[in-house]
Image (cartoon, rainbow, N blue to C red; front, side, top):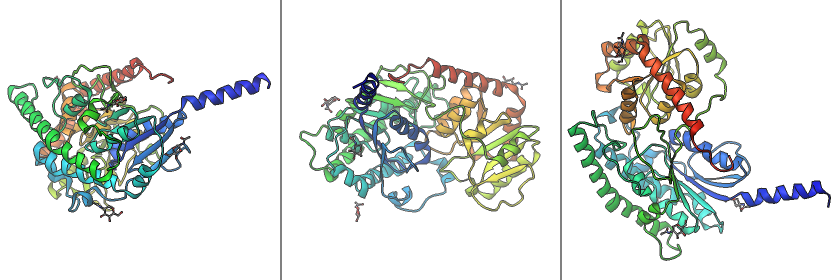
Length: 453
Ligand SMILES: *[C@@H]1O[C@H](CO)[C@@H](O)[C@H](O)[C@H]1NC(C)=O
Ligand SMILES: *[C@@H]1O[C@H](CO)[C@@H](O)[C@H](O)[C@H]1NC(C)=O
Ligand SMILES: *[C@@H]1O[C@H](CO)[C@@H](O)[C@H](O)[C@H]1NC(C)=O
Ligand SMILES: *[C@@H]1O[C@H](CO)[C@@H](O)[C@H](O)[C@H]1NC(C)=O
């Protein structure tokens, strides 16, 4: 055997030995979750691991070592029962109601859908061995039991930052003084009332979650995975035994918190400077926006076209008064009285738009992914929170000084114009956004790289 062959053989063996069989459990169908979770699975595959994915989002033309097992196709609203509500109606929903009617109800129904899905049942019957189970942490705790099934370490990954459940899973202190419950909208978290509300809600959430929700998840484990090696650890013990938790947070943005070394902030993992290009027509529109452009998009779950007529008209009248070009994600073919400076599309490539130098402000619902994209590109935000963690994300933006919150119920011609005008004309928002953007980039450089990176 000559040296060259020997080296090749050695490399081949080294590659084989280095790669692991990884089960990646990210079943939740929400597009915004998958935007952040997709690059992790694909990157592991790119680095030579054999990645098996339980997912609700099919990646087209995946690498050959990225194996997808799909959740049965069903709309989340079919799973919960009932039809898709107008999401704008959720503005008035309390954190308690949101947990009972959406998160917990939906979480249980969805977990059952996953465990009862044809392809996933097939996977679980096969005699595959896994070296590692990476699971999303989002109201599908029953699936953590797969770490026990395959006798593999469990890594958790979340699409949002610090919260009570992460800290419990982590054995990290709760830090209620700085960490506000992720789905709670407290106007002033550091006031006495704000702290009381946060304390009350955290206790409420903990009691329901631990003694009712996790018990219900345990029942799903017993129903769908009756043949697990005994003794089967409880879901709470499985979580506490997680080897690592990857969180979609970043110290340059989040409220201060102390983390044990098993918690790693990977906020912005889905971001990159050089992505695909803007489509030619949008590139031209933005290049030609002499006075800059306003970009408005309420994300994948909220449809602007469902806005009540009076709010829609107020928004159109404000856009008409602006000299800036406006891009708006509008999901209908028609929009009556559309001003000339407004361009509507059913879908808009957000990352690429936000990276254009002429974007002056992002009018957003405050979803974490979009907020991170704007932060990364140094774009100020006018935030209109609708539900979930949106209020908290935007409060952070406002506190850091690169944006303003406009309450949905307060939207009218006067309020929207005032906020837009302020953010467009007062340079302090833009400067703060740019500062943070640099901070965020810097944060990445300082972040320790994983071994082998
Ligand atoms: C890679 O994963 C697939 C799907 O789980 C499995 O069928 C296959 O046996 C795995 N390959 C190796 C080399 O373990
Ligand atoms: C599980 O899936 C089967 C079809 O594969 C369906 O008939 C059954 O109703 C499902 N069970 C539940 C509880 O959804
Ligand atoms: C905790 O994890 C270790 C290694 O990952 C494993 O050996 C052990 O069985 C786990 N214990 C529980 C209760 O899950
Ligand atoms: C611009 O906004 C900042 C922050 O809200 C404020 O302190 C400053 O006074 C504003 N400047 C002008 C000229 O309005």
